[in-house]
Amino acid sequence: KAAELIKFAVNLAIGHEHGAKLHLGRARECGASEDEVWETVVYAMRPVAAQVRNFAKAIVAG
Image 1 (cartoon, one colour):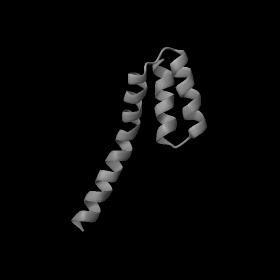
Image 2 (tube, rainbow, N blue to C red):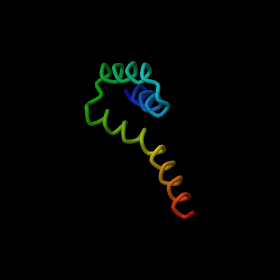
Image 3 (cartoon, rainbow, N blue to C red):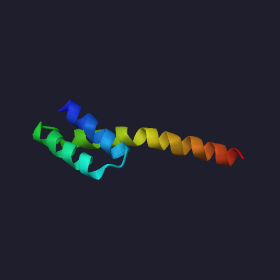
Image 4 (cartoon, rainbow, N blue to C red):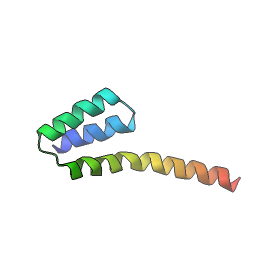
């Protein structure tokens, strides 16, 4: 289950829809709860959010 959730997160982070759907389905088959799925989504968002924050800081600081 954990491995499938990790693969799901990686595919979300790289924007690979087919892989994300595939590994989401497999994670659910392994018993992943909706809370675990959404926690995984949050983890996938963190690096992207950090990049946006750093980019904004650089622009705002001018």
